[in-house]
Image (cartoon, rainbow, N blue to C red; front, side, top):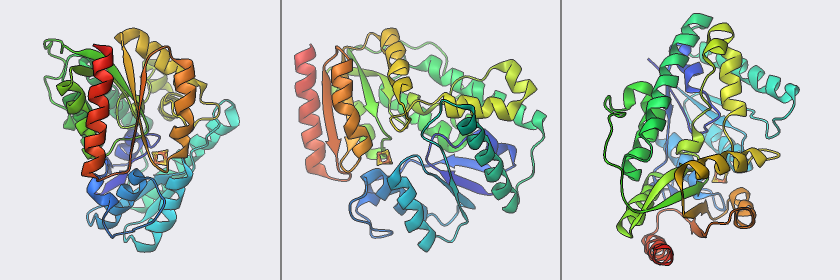
Length: 329
Ligand code: SF4
């Protein structure tokens, strides 16, 4: 079975799986930010890591890249020159409030479907799509239920495993009750994390905190909204599009008020006492949200900017998280 790789949360794994192909959401390794493959100056480390990961992946049967941010769009231009696997550039509109852009997203899913069929995928029946959506939805519910009970890093890695391998990638006993973790409850908010950035979960824990809300793109915030079970049976593609396009809140949305609405309800559920704001240098989109977040929230905000694979930056991050937690304890 061919594997289709992507990283953007607006690519529905269920749609790829329904075509009989294996969806795999990749999270780049920070080592890729200093590798030579597809080396490009001035792009965000996540994009650089993604470019490297795609160009060195010899097993992918196809690659899907979206237009959610300008740097990812640029990644497509770079990857297309050096990648052997077929590429698909999926237009994901930043505006979302009117029916025509929602229809455009659905049309893009249909176009993606034709691309998948050109790679040997089959055209899915509604029932088949609905079954797959149900499986994924149940897995997402299990993951969300486990939040707050698992160590933050383990939880984040389960979300990544789900993106990489679908429902089969998550442990079977994930919803069994486990003792709650102690520590100052924190949220982490920002764009996507690379694998090495997951050290932040350990650093916070060692400093007496516990990240109870992973509002990064690679965490809970990157999971689509729950499916309406009736809509899923009735018109599965419409339900899929709605849960992804209207259900994932991101800084790239115009307007992005939904991000703050989503955050408000999650913060209320979790009694968070401080927010770690994580962003990469050269990511203007998330940098622009920093001041707005500070003005909007009454909570202390720690700004962590990173540039990828760099030990000095890691030590700096460690020191800043420790100092932040000292002020909260
Ligand atoms: S971190 Fe920023 S620049 Fe990098 S991919 Fe995400 S939105 Fe784009």
